[in-house]
Image (cartoon, rainbow, N blue to C red; front, side, top):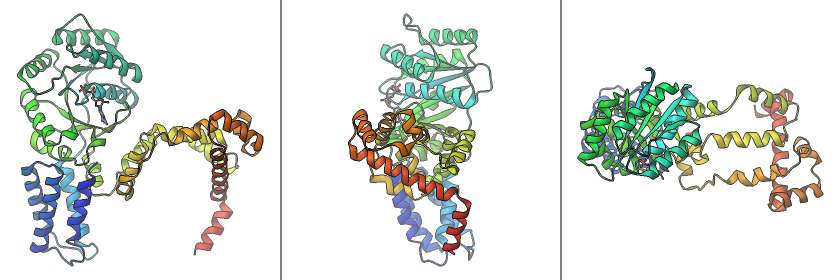
Length: 440
Ligand code: GDP
């Protein structure tokens, strides 16, 4: 995401490279480039204009310290201003009340139902909640089926009433059911339409009036750019929602909606969807997104995701095993599985500073680990614990069992051995000291 904008901004900053100070003239030129970059990213015209004016004023008002270059100073100002543009600080979901009612609204295809499932998973696993999903799309039986499937995937309860065609009645029944059932968050998925129309607005307004939700989240497809912003405006004028969910940011290379929505609608973006899977949901942090746009990489998100997946105790056990040179194929397999749990590999790499842009045109297959997994799974427990025992005849059997080429099996075992050697070196304090001496 934001690939083009990143490139263009880099170009804009180049204007300042080699300049000793920020002057009226070089700032004006840079601002022109930045405004062009924002417009190309499909940012709303007024937003782009106000934004560059603000940045310019801030830049001109500052003395350039000798320690930093004008380019660096401008990056810092841009970072602060982009953060402010996208809402400043993170806006948490208001889920204090028991039960909390959350209404989900948006056009068909925006990703409402998918988000409803993702939100249930987020509330369950990160907030310790017991959510109930209410299927309020009375027009599409397939939408009810879809919600049931997603609820099953994330292990959440779901309330449906296929007999009824009254969205208000279903929502109220759902809330009553949730209260009786001990659900502390009730998420109501509403019906969408293909385009904006009054009937849809009336219907959701009715549901809102009856259910008095603490949160109304407007779900919109980021790939639709300025249309997303316009739709948000129409919905907000009628519904006065509490937050925006931008979906499909993984497919949005321009990022205009993410940048303009807050300033046009004055409602915070609360979540972003970054894929079709149930765990592809992130809380929206304006500051992290800003540094990502400027190519600083979203290191904090990366660390957080890693922390969610990795168990400290397990890590300590693993370190001990490495030190004793007892790291085996079982450990290797569980490491691969943990990396996979963290999500799409290309997305993860993109969060590392400097790597994002390099990865742009590289195709990383998420199934790349499949071959490795099936090879390890074809090993006997004894072989997995004793990698040295895997001789030629065992390799032949593993290759046949896993349906992979013999060369692949040999390659994996060789890589594993190399890795073990390296791990041993790094965990041996005397070897480390020697290496450090050599590098001095
Ligand atoms: P609804 O009509 O608003 O309920 O939309 P759905 O939840 O059915 O989503 C429409 C399509 O968008 C489905 O194919 C989803 O898998 C896909 N989708 C939803 N969110 C995301 C996302 O964040 N990234 C990607 N790549 N696809 C998404």
